Image (cartoon, rainbow, N blue to C red; front, side, top):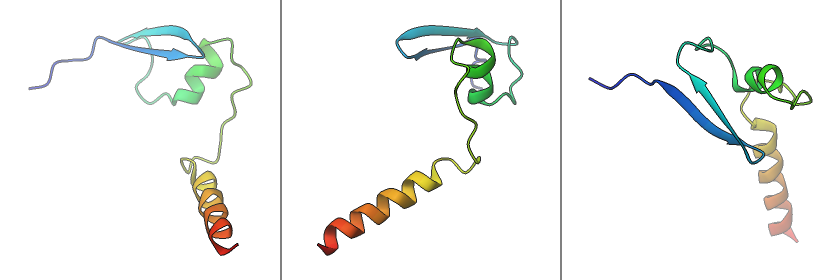
Length: 68
C-alpha cells in the first residue's frame, strides 16, 4: 500500500510553495491554485487541451524548416 501524501512542495518563479494535504480540494487545477494562492494573478487558463496548440505549432515549424 502506498503511503499517504502529507504535503506537496514545488517552486514557482524561484519561490517555494508548500501545500498541506487537505488544504486544497484534490480537484483544484494548478492554474486555479496559482491564480488564487500566489501573487501571479495573470496566469491564463487555456483551452484545457494540455499544450496541443504549442505542439502543433512546433511540428509545423519543424516541417517548414526541413522543407527549406
